[in-house]
Length: 190
Image 1 (cartoon, rainbow, N blue to C red):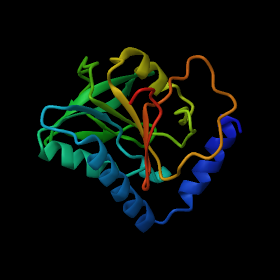
Image 2 (cartoon, rainbow, N blue to C red):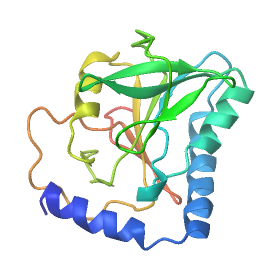
Image 3 (tube, helix red, strand yellow):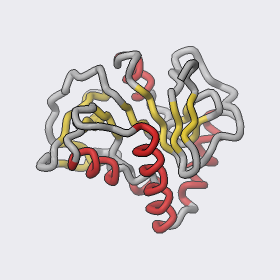
């Protein structure tokens, strides 16, 4: 299948989930992540803020956990068609951008590139770690600039079954995918 077909199909699949299912599945994904990766004090985590209208994984569960345990939290912000990484704290103020996403008011790019974990939004991920996002390319550009040691981790309600047929050379695959039932590794030697 092509990315556009996956995008349409998985937006529909997500839309069909009830609020209760979204919260339950998000909780399971969170638990799998914590059990597998064991984030610790001082780790640096870049994580997206869920776009609830698209039934994205409720990442506020992760953010609250990280902040309560002195794990540094960074979130994306789009400025001039470029994604930057802003460090947030419990007192950080947010506003809603033109896409309906909650973003920190601050425009201060953290300049951090050596994240321990980059928790990445997606609509679909295949068995090779290739992801289908919303088609804007922000994360592929972001992945090009961060440390090669940073673990790129997708989170999704659904396990991969079909391959993406139109992967191209600039697509950067994920290292892991966390679903409610599995943590899949795509990195060789891990």
